[in-house]
Length: 179
Image (cartoon, rainbow, N blue to C red; front, side, top):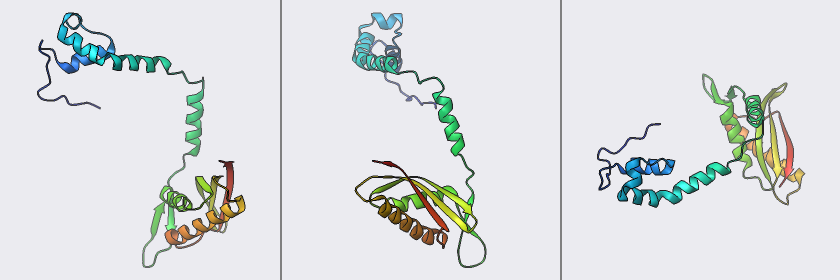
C-alpha cells in the first residue's frame, strides 16, 4: 500500500525533509549530514524512544515452534467448505436462498441470547430428514448443561423458522468446555 506524501512536505531549517530524517532515525541509519546537523540530531533525539521501543519489540518476538504455521494452515484448510445455498421457504414463484455462512451466522447470533452457553461453531448438514444443525458450545455460567442445551435448541428452532421457514430436522449440541 502506497502512502501519499503531502504536496508541500515539512522541511527542517537545514533543508532536509522531516519524514526522511525520522525514517533514517527509526531505522538507526542516519546519513553523514544527519549525524552532524543540530536540527537533524534534535529530531532523531525526539524519536529515539520510539526507535528503541521498536528494536526491543523486534528482539523480543519469539520464533514460532517448528511446524506451527503448517499445522495452523492445515487446520484452516480442513475447515473450508463451499458456501452453498440453503433454500428458504418463501411464498410466490421462484426460489429464495441464503448462503450457508449467513445461515450459520444467524443461528449462532440467535444463540447469543441463551444464558449459560456460548456457541463456538455451527455446522449445517443435509440429513436424511432435512437440514440438521450441529453446534459446539461451552458452558459459561451456573445454568446446567441440559437447560443450556434446551435453550440453544429453542433459539435455533425459532431463528430457523424465521429465516428458513422451517425447523431443522435435528439439532445436536456438544459442550466442549466449561468456562
